[in-house]
Length: 250
Image (cartoon, rainbow, N blue to C red):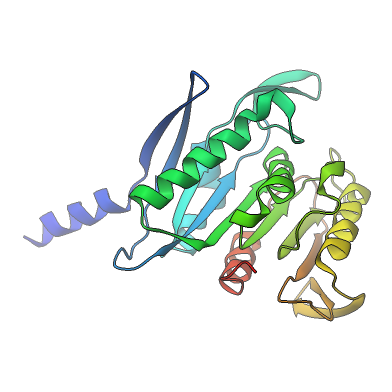
């Protein structure tokens, strides 16, 4: 009997494959369902980098393990041309590729609300590299759906300027060879302006800077590390802590 219960728990904890048809094109994602299903649950979208994939992101970043109470969605990107080659990825600004990835996000969020007991006030986005850039696209176009966001090793398109205030945690390597630190600094400065926070620096966690005073809970947290184009150790835990501290989008 115990063996059967254990087996059932493994099945429940494992990823579920989701399939959508967006403008006649099949889109896929995997979701790790929340460990609690008796009340509305948070939803976290984790977007892989250019050339990555949904299962690689789940294995590498493990948001579902750090926050088992959340529904954690790892979407799969389509082929996109960046850096002189084609590989799975995401649109890097609004209106590119007929907004195919924004439509995909809308469909996934609707699925989470209809079938996964999602709490609409607890929806979050994070991503690595090209996935971080797409997170900025979401902030530019879907901020009303997000409680907070956490781009890692990305940059923001010009459309990010003037976006609605949204709590954001930005992580970047000082030795990033693909996306220079200065590009992340520009995104941080735009986020500071968007969110209306002050310029006084305060430690949020070791190595993490919070800009104060904070307006209406719309924090801007900035973290640099000595590495390159990477999701450094401790990033997942910091993102989960940040998301848990921002449960409502005003």
